[in-house]
Amino acid sequence: MSNSPLLSIQEATKYYGAHRALFNVSLDLYQGEVLCIVGENGAGKSTLIKILSGAIQPDNGTVTVQGKEYGGLSPRQSMELGVATIYQDVELIDSLTVADNIFLGNEHRSFRFLVDAKSQFVKAREILDSLHIDIDEKKLVEDLSAAEQQTLQIVKALHQDSRVLIMDEPTSSLGLEETRSLMELIRNLRSHGIGVIYISHYLEEVFEIGDRILILKDGEPVGTYNREALDADSVVRKMVGRDASVFFQREESSIGAPRVEVRNMTLGHTVQDVSFDIRAGEIFGIGGLVGAGRTELVELIYGLVKPQKGETRIDGARCRIESPADAIRHGICLVSEDRHKQGMFTNRSVIENITVVHNERVGKKVVSSSADERAARAMIQDLRIATADPWDVITGLSGGNQQKAVVARWLLDESILYIFDEPTKGVDVGAKQEIYKIMVRFAQAGKCVLMISSDMPELISMSDRIGVMRRGQMTQILAKSEASEENLIRLFMGVGNAETE
Image (cartoon, rainbow, N blue to C red; front, side, top):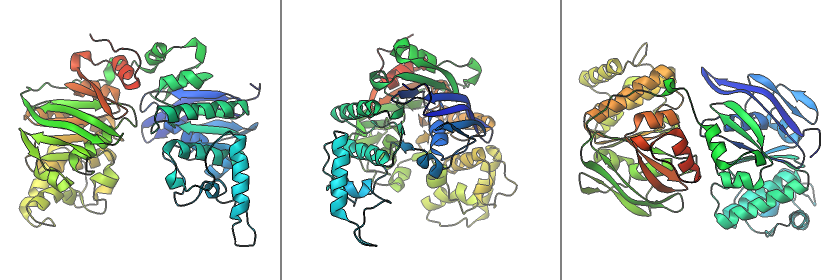
């Protein structure tokens, strides 16, 4: 490796409101090096790569590329400096050929406005052969496998003279053989002097191709280590561990017999034959790494997506759920992870957002009685939703109060299963406590609560049992007494055997 880094970042810090996403993180990347970045969900990995790609600006810190220091980069600057980011979601045009995608924006032209397709095919073949990549340059992207599409993104970046590749969970949608092919390509890139920043939850990949490993925890660096200095167990230990004060102390509820049964839920490789039950009065947590299939499972249960196989039963009766409206009629409620896109009517008032489901159930399209308004105002008072005027547009509220308003709509009618997908994402500490109390209230009333969370203290504090998802499968269900941070991370990452207390 060269003595001079291709890229450096020094003491990068980023806040989103009061939330500290990243604090004093530094790294160096050298020519021909693979630097792996690991950390649990919410550790700051995505924030860090967004700073490097120019998608966001740091509040403090500097980025140095090609010996020049910057307070922050724009996306154009990042690309012009030879930094290419390859995200988990493929960014190619399906209806164009492999060659068209490689030269997109820099086409070979025979005349002023005509693309010279023949010339592009020839040059694309030369580029692919130089990297020992066996992809047909004339093939449409939509006909490529997931691995071939990921590979094509890399080729496109290299054609743009990128010297640094940032790869974010590149194998999350790949099979075993496809992953092996990608690993071999990365080794080839390293031999050509390309520097690679590789973000992955899969520690077997990290130890296979990484030269050094940067570990992040809660937005802060734990340290950067030579690969030989660590093993999978030591990485896990360094990723977890917090002060006990971050764990919420919830009231217990009386747990009865199973009321909700999910059986053999399947959607391709995303959700594979998942079965579990939830008992009356229970908060059943589901944990796993990004891409494990948790949110996709919720979408199947709630009718947002139709499963290939599987069913949901409530109190022993099979539920026919083909839409969210069907789910609501069966007593299933969802507080979505993305409240702006799926949870709120952003151009409507707080009161309308609270009453919308109730009015739909009784066949009304708008708040049409003083009783509706009184009920909504009672929810606002009960949940302590801070609003100057309940008829103001909901987007004027803070994130935590928006979330409580979404929860409030499900309190106006009796339901059985309450699904919370990342319930406290983007809310402040005070609002978190209020939302936790609401969930406990549902449980104490004998309802079933299903909670998906990437927040480890939240998952452990709130759950009576925890289902572990990994690569689309529910691999294990833990009792509360078995759930520790280190145990869960081991199971999420597939590292060794988890220990029970």
